[in-house]
Length: 191
Image 1 (tube, rainbow, N blue to C red):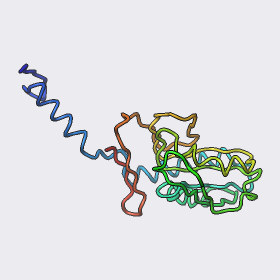
Image 2 (tube, one colour):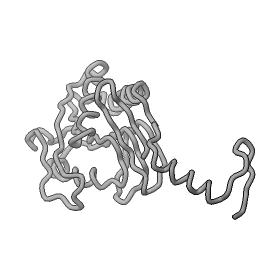
Image 3 (cartoon, rainbow, N blue to C red):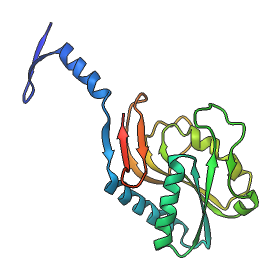
């Protein structure tokens, strides 16, 4: 077996390094801690405000799970800085299904007409979840529809782009981002 020598690492075999690489891939790597997440949310709220400052009302629609929690946090932050009213709604769909039969939202579709809507999810990976979330909004003739995500992985399979992104991260297709937004436990990990 071939031996290699690298400064600060000493001598090791190619096989040993491969095993080290595999074991590192199975560990969780912290990419955002609580203070960083709160800072990203504050910045995203200011960006949403700047993009919609002329509106009287905007709608934040959070995808169920961590996306809705992120939408709640953005709503609270916008309440501190923005002059417009924020209506919060939840988008209900099964993220694991490849096709969606029903996508539910908590407000009547008539309230979406001619409104600025920000669709919110915790992680933008391929764009599939956001793409499946669009029909109730597009069928209601919104004034504009923007997307906000805490982490953008940039593995587009659908023509979806985030307008407001907290953190952009290039990952492999096999990597997973795990976001927790519970008070006192806010983290984003790369797995």
